Image (cartoon, rainbow, N blue to C red; front, side, top):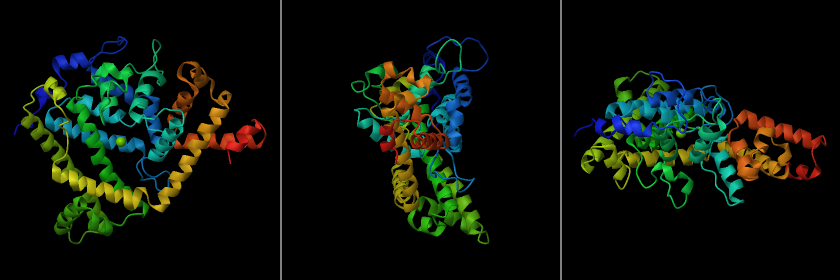
Length: 392
Ligand code: MG
């Protein structure tokens, strides 16, 4: 099996085609197009805000829990490793990893669910991939001549399509992103790199929080059990927590190597030798082997049952949903209370979309400040009484 997929990567003519930007890049320098995109993403305000957004744990009971920023950096590590092993464009893969969660609202998936429910009441949906595109095209204002980061076509396509496909019938505004074709391998590997990173990290943070126990994980998660037994056999006198950390690294490595080998095998089996071939395949080829996939599902199920929906986190999620929903309804009633820069967009975008854009950009800390501020103003009579009814 040939695991060098360079001929299928985004290089040469294909790189040139996907390096197109909406506006000419003003200053020529030695960086390749995707390196420049990576630097623009890292220097954006929305990237820095990832430090203040929940990954799994909303409350900061430990300084060692992942934030969405440190999770993002871990995804980039895995993506670089996979792209490099397969001979793909490492700069593009790294850029897509660094930008992959930039559209996430505060409070992790609880915040995302709440925003989506709020929008559905008005016939709209919240989609963090499409919101990420709005951020890099509209809300990042870092340049004198245009709105947005002016990222390449390849990066924008990857932002939209790294985790799912979109149909042109449903999303005519995305027609320029080859919706009837598969994305490049550099984008396909991002969703799996994300899985590898969080499957490892959430066990680690779960144990750090005291909500998960190492022995219980080993009893129910075969991916970790195997690694744990190997490390324990090699270091019989080591403390359990160090064996566990070593086993987590081994587990991450096993999943990463499985992704590399399975992707290479699938590309070879399909006879694909170019990016055009990859795009024309009927499905994505960057996947885990059937065995690793069933182990992945086993662990994911375990994490849902024991961590994501446990009473301690459920309480945090309910509070998060309450904050998002009440603020959303408040600004719906009182659009004049929105910051001026957002109010300007109400005419063109509609009030519901503008409120969503405002909330989705917030960090956990900032949205709680907004919530406290609005409640204070309602209580002190600084806002009309009809808002008071919305804020308990
Ligand atoms: Mg992620």
